[in-house]
Length: 55
Image (cartoon, rainbow, N blue to C red; front, side, top):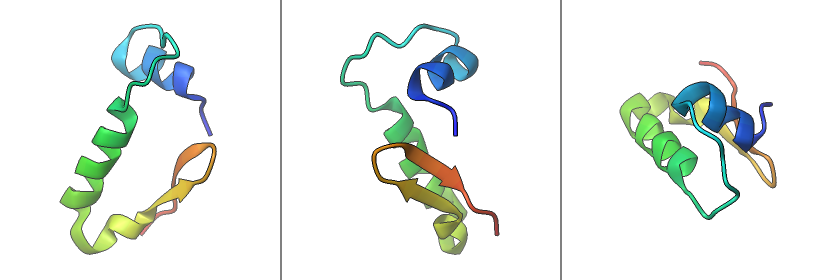
């Protein structure tokens, strides 16, 4: 599972400054909404982030 600073660099192209950004949470929430009944395919891993479990 990639760390949050790695996601910021690889996906959005900038360094994570350690601030309280919730961009990953917002994108995940939007993706779950679009997935409808498949939303459970994105699992929340407490203390780490998210994991794609598949359909």
